[in-house]
Image (cartoon, rainbow, N blue to C red; front, side):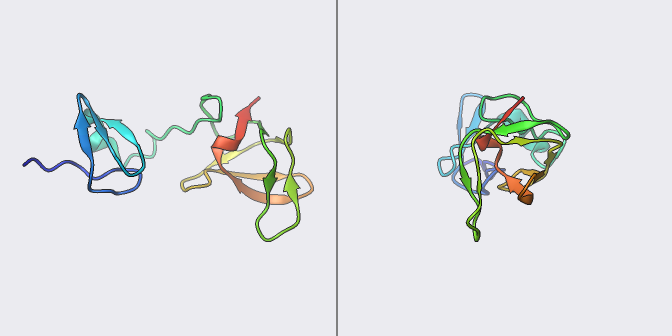
Length: 114
């Protein structure tokens, strides 16, 4: 039995191959078989907004749904414009400052690029 690589996203050991792709059944992450050596590179990381547009440091985005701020009664409203974002590693992949609220981390799935 051949040893398949662990999932680069969640670390699961239960990956399987389907044609030319590896697939993780736990998080549904898919990656090409020839990319297993590149999995540790940050330069290969691509962060996309809710519409599939590629985000970069310094972009301006808008929030697409009301976001409650944990531990506070504040809410980031739909349509809030966020300027000069910074992309980071982790679950919340955008660092930014929002007027009236301050420094925050957002998930890219809740924003769209302007």
